[in-house]
Amino acid sequence: MSKRNAAIFASGTGSNFEAIMEAGDLSCDIVLLICDKPKATVIQKAEKYQVPTFVFNPKDYGSKEEYEKVLVEKLKEANISWIFLAGYMRIVGSVLLQAYEGRIVNIHPSLLPDFPGKDAIDQAYHAGVKTTGVTVHYIDSGIDTGPIIAQEKVEVEENETLESLEEKIHHVEHQLYPRVIREIVK
Ligand code: GRF
Image (cartoon, rainbow, N blue to C red):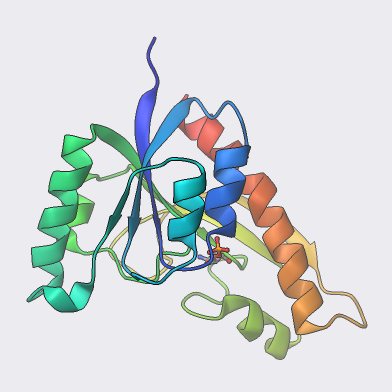
């Protein structure tokens, strides 16, 4: 059976993008990167892996509906079945949600429902929790509220710094996301 096509949405560094590309047999092909930040480093990573990229600037559009219609067109052209958000710093709107209901997945660097939204690692660190972690979940119309697929804990040690915690969390993300993708796309 031929593999399904998937797209990654990212806005930043793209370490998760890279981990997914390096993971080997994913049971889907990553055939498109969608990026909303023309200067993001993830774009160079996509070049390295020869993944076609669609870069857009939301400011060039009148509304979220308008640019999401364009994104849906691009996704359909590339025959995309699954969308994996990997540091995509925008709230997914109704146009994209309706077109890909139940097939948009996100990774978030905390144990949801704790610390949703931006700077989750920083939030958890400054809240002084002993345990935080990583969540992979489906997207719904809320911010980091969709059904949880998998979670992995990360302990915060006595002498932990924000930097060392970030490093531990990213390490877990890079293992967990490809594993979950492999499972759900099967
Ligand atoms: C990750 O921590 C991810 O959980 C969050 O955004 C960050 C993206 O990092 N949603 P990178 O661009 O994959 O390095």
